[in-house]
Image (tube, rainbow, N blue to C red):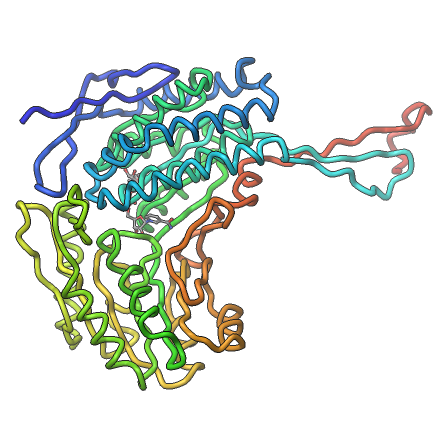
Length: 492
Ligand code: NAD
């Protein structure tokens, strides 16, 4: 079968790598190569970053009013909407996410561009009530410069949109390095940006591997801000790379998010929230609710319902409209899930459902898996799987539930299931986590910040904070006095 061939996109042109090297990308639903991409290295990254820097300083982009920038973003949102089906197909093909999920995500994706388009001309400074006579001072917010966006494979378009839309709304330029496992949808997005009318060099995509293209990008001296989503080990490289030129950083990393279920909860809702939270996208979601903390009085009932629903999940090809769970995106991730389940069983966990690789078309599939752990210190209660594996443990009191929820070095998301409004608010106050969902799970919006506490990273994407994080604040002092400047050794 011949591979689909994609190019990368630098300075307004589709292009090959300088070295002409290419790499293949696999279709996880059948474990066969399906596409090939230019394998960028430092030379290509240098060209892309210099193009982005030239665009940042060039008239075509710099002289646009903020309102005009917003209009370009709105146009890009419209084009994403018009080309939603093609983008949904590409993302489903490259990472194995269900076509019905990528269609759903694509139907919402333009909203990120519309929301940020609306903010582009509302990035305001302040006039300061300054305590010096004859002085006026005000602040302005200016774009930072070239942004490097490093994207993982699990939700490439969504995770790119929440970086590109605010970065461009604020007037920056950007170089995107998608995952080597999921680059096709991002190259397609770049072509839509060209159609929308963004000047050459404003949005660039380099395709390639992390240690070569990714590392060259994050350590490039002209990069002023790095927006990274991915794993903690990679994030450590990125933080070190940023030290050379003190680039701004936002890190969206992993999680081990708790789902806390109290006896007064609507149990069926909680079960649906748990199933959606950890088995949707085959658990390859940063906010996967993979730690089930369930009150002892309902523990058996909830576990049985989750196990029953897991047993009915229809595993199959992501392109089939009735499939409920598709493959894992990479063989490495499948091996991680399998090894972590094996370790859990060695540590005494009880398998309630799953734990096997179903044979579907030779692809990288793993069953929805539910285990009961013995201790909150078990590996499965502490470490992220990034796969469809839930670890459960009972609790007796609200205090114990809170202690268990906070017994994690991560802090990305938490689900709280209760009808007691005071208890819900107490836990919203006390659980250390960047997102808390009460009686719901996995809801996102362009208007709501996303980000983590602790090892889940820092910085926020989404909402007004996001656009401001792509700006620098400048303070301007004006001497209002008509008197000559005073003797420099007399302080004002
Ligand atoms: P990863 O860290 O392996 O790769 C992420 C990106 O970094 C890829 O584009 C990769 O090529 C690049 N990269 C790798 N080495 C690099 C280096 N030395 N320098 C610069 N870039 C480099 O992550 P992944 O396996 O693609 O994704 C899974 C991880 O991402 C999980 O830990 C998951 O929790 C996390 N994640 C977090 C969020 C969030 O919003 N918090 C969302 C999705 C995924």
